[in-house]
Image 1 (cartoon, rainbow over the protein chains, first blue to last red):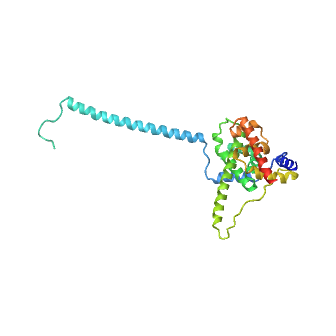
Image 2 (image 1 turned 90 degrees about the vertical axis):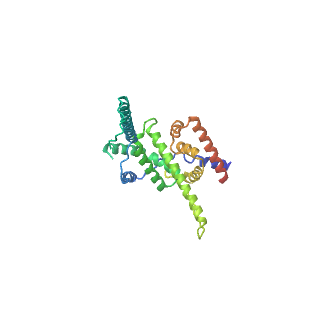
Image 3 (image 1 turned 45 degrees about the vertical axis):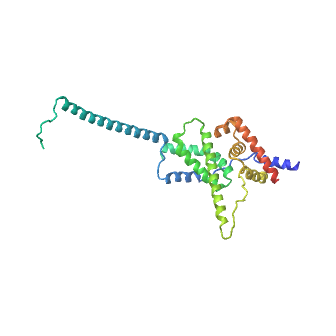
Length: 97
Length: 177
């Protein structure tokens, strides 16, 4: 009986617990820690925007390079067509060089 | 830090400093550690304030950070303790230091101090979820609904966690009283 009462007393010992005041110097310590980290924390939104811009730039660059390469290949193909189409292949045994 | 951010951060700090400190001290059960973890909580609040989307209330969000930081601190402390125990096995004197000191919560009435110290020692032995539900309910006085939002669980899960926490505490107390 006494044991049960003691257990109940322990279990109920937090009733009426009061809020404790945090150390008044804690705020300054937090501020100096934030400032001592030497950099401003960048909000996540800005980080995502920067990443998205970088990816967009990368995509544009890759597509521009691919387009340029296709154009180059197309030009070669076109010039080959022109050479064979107009019978411009040199069949003369005389070499120019 | 911009002045606007600074002001709003100070307002947040002033509103929540005691709630955070009280929650944290119930987990870490040591004033110095509680101050260190409280600092970490507000640094995280400052760092993540841009990503706070307002899906939950500010209070819920801050409590969640406080709970996570406290649990992380306890895990790291336990790892250090285990390492210290292992290294002590190979010490010349073989002395193993255990932290047996009782924690006296500063907000407890004098007549309850001894019983509360026993209870805090046993709260420390509870599984994480039960410990969180018990601390948020009995120390912070949060409602089931508020606890369910902090822990991201249903109201019934919180209720069942609290029942199991009390059962476990009762079993542990029966062994020592």
